[in-house]
Every structure is written in structure tokens, then in C-alpha cells.
Image 1: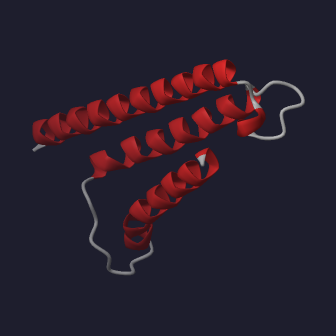
Image 2: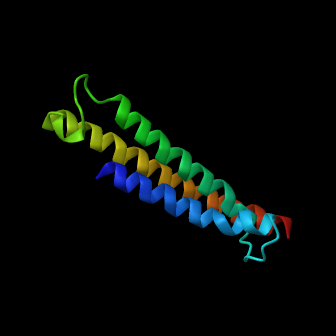
Amino acid sequence: MFRFTTSTCLLLFSFISLPQTAQAANFGFVRWPGYLDMPIIAAMLMTGLSFVLLKTQMPKGAKDFVSVPKDERSVMLKASAFLMLVSFVVCLGMIFVGMGLQRAVE
């Protein structure tokens, strides 16, 4: 389930970044404001980091997430959820800071 969720998030982020890439290649997609680029990159990095942390924290001999003992599994899930929450807050903060900087430039 976690792999599916992570893959879905990364796929969604890649589709979100497609208009920016297409605009750079002159395909005529709508370009969003520049302050949305960094939060998307940060979200992708944090999602990948949480996946790597979850994989590295699995006990030796555990073939998949279900074979991990229940108490260790809950700790791993809480750490991963906390990292996702931090990434969400960082992304929102970056968007608001970017909006403020954009208005200051104008």
C-alpha cells in the first residue's frame, strides 16, 4: 500500500510539473507562476526521503512491510506520516513566501 501511495504521489507530481516542462519546450501549455516550482521539487524530495527512510528502517529479514512486527510498524508509519506533514507545511510556507516575493517585485 505504501509503495502504491508513493508511486501515485510521484506520478501526480510529475504530471503537475509537465506544463512547466512543456512551456520551456514551447509546446504552448499554460505556465504557472514561478513560485510554485520549488514547493513541487521540495514535495518530491520529501516524498522520496520518507520512502527511503521507511525502507532503511525495516528490520533485517523482513521481506515486506506486513512482516514487520506491529509495534515497529506503527513507529515507522508515525515517522513517515510526520515527515509527510512537515513536507506539506514546508510546501505551503514556500508558496506563501513566493507569493509575497512576487508581489514585492511587482
